[in-house]
Length: 177
Image 1: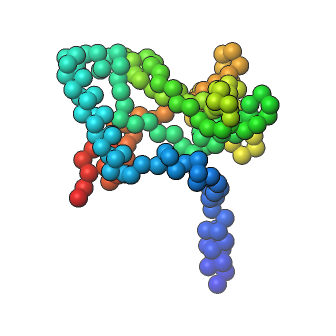
Image 2: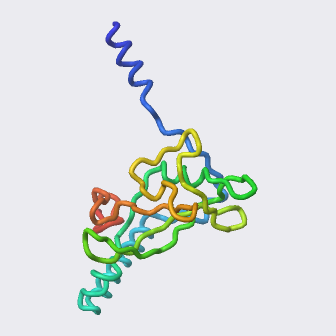
Image 3: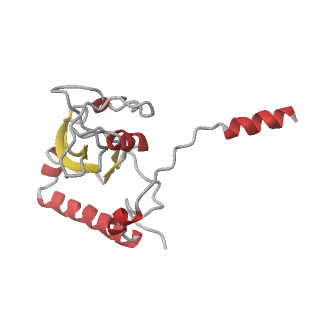
């Protein structure tokens, strides 16, 4: 009986992510059917391959490498959404800029997403992205540490095809029935 109590209490103490509240009216125009999402990602992969063949596999490979996807954990989004604008209001959303960076290890340029929070007026919030709030830590994200002119953004997301879905979603390749 003692062992069961200890196991039960250990399981109940597992850290669970807090529930994120949403406003259904603000997200309904952004939700698309998964079949349409699969069509979009398939079209992207096909046209990237076509463009790659038109440039004889040089330009996209060395100067403009496009990933299928990039992944960020929920802590990164929480960190961005916890940022405050100049008036002290929380971020209204997250803007994703396309960027291009040189990957020293692979000796090529890669297209990457650069994320910043924005305020309710649609202006970017440029703050130092450090663990300023008690609940947010972003281990392993170099750009979440204060650098440069006092502001930061989020980058360094794991890229697909290196880090991908197991294939069951159909968003990174052929779908099942």
